[in-house]
Length: 447
Image (cartoon, rainbow, N blue to C red; front, side, top):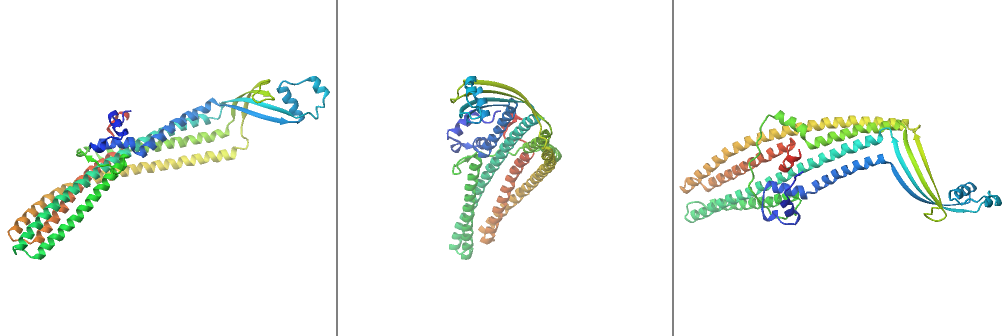
């Protein structure tokens, strides 16, 4: 899977970088996929799922146990048996001593036990299948987390671009207001306007200073948010490349809804978790069935640790069934069935939630487009209104307050157009995300 170009990985991991360069949306997403802790955590969980498959399959090979045991006993039966096992039994000593009161015997037993399952009622196979299914769910969750981080990073990038443009917009508006204040001062000195008009202009200029300060603070916070999603130091300065135009939207709403239900990675993960839950009924059913295994044992017996004066081996076939397990096993089976029913209901609700998300995002995009179209018309009208008011003020036909009102209307129109324009970008990005379309170009190969 090709995630990120090698040159970019080297730049990111050696601490160089993107902070000193012009940052594109793709650069920001690539950085987030490397450094964002949420992606790292999801990748680790996905890898853990792969390891659990190997763990589950390992039970098919049974187990091999090595044990070292020390036994010190004067029990007549044990002394007799362990003396034989050590291969130190002496007939003459046995008949000349009292076997009922033997001297205590020290025995070291080294045992190697091999247990191979032959039949477990399907429990091992079901556990392996569960592990494989949950590993698939973990992989889908990792991919959804990557897409979520890409979406959050792209959104933060757009928000920072919007915040900086807002600062630039207010800076220009503040410059215009300052020019009007200078003009008002000149007119006041000439007695053309009242001192009250000059004071109104100065008050408006101070209000613009406050708005500009707030906008600059918002831009700094937006920059910190972008760094947060990129997994970088939040104080890292960023120089942004121009935003590309919004991705095209084609097709009908119902098509987008259908695609989302089919290709959303988080929904796919939930479905695989449901499949794993269904397998739990198979695991619970195995409690009704017998278990068959082959057991091999090899032992060394001596009066010193790890000694091997005596040795012997045994092979056994073992079959067992829990005769008193019917009640708990039946309850476990019933619980597994009910869990499956609840999971199925959750999946249906999940699917409906996805459909609702897509519909809402679609309508939000339609609204954003309409608002932007209206905002552009309003902005054109506000620019013309200010131009007319400025001319009339210079001709002595309008008051300063009329010019300031026109400035306020223009600033509000510019802000409205800016917000609406960026809302189109954000709504388009969100529609692609909630529909399951990738926001990571390099992930196209992995689909």
